Image (cartoon, rainbow, N blue to C red; front, side, top):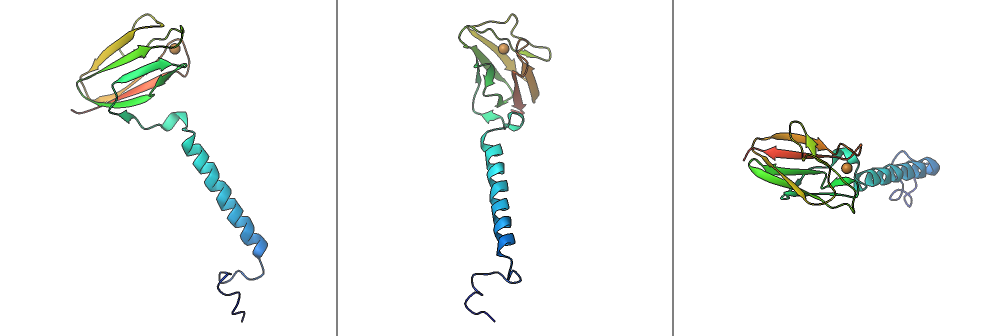
Length: 133
Ligand SMILES: [Cu+2]
């Protein structure tokens, strides 16, 4: 019996400190990777931002990329990307001709999820989630 080591080493692990250290390092690594994946904000899974009715078309993206508003809200897009024109095109609604300045507003009367995109720039997409008022 090793009374001194009993408190430091968990049961059943005697003689394998290398394995234990390896496991701990692996767990740490996995944790770090998960953290990095979360904080760098994968493009796909951003939760919609609430309390915002303005979206900026800037830096070749819509920001916030996804918003959540109650039904009856008018959302305004602001084109402000240093001369780079963008548009906003959803299913059955559009800001029309791409533009580099100004704003476009669209009312959302019905609950639903409204995905939209810029027709010029692939991957420049956004989403308006409209909740029942
Ligand atoms: Cu664009």
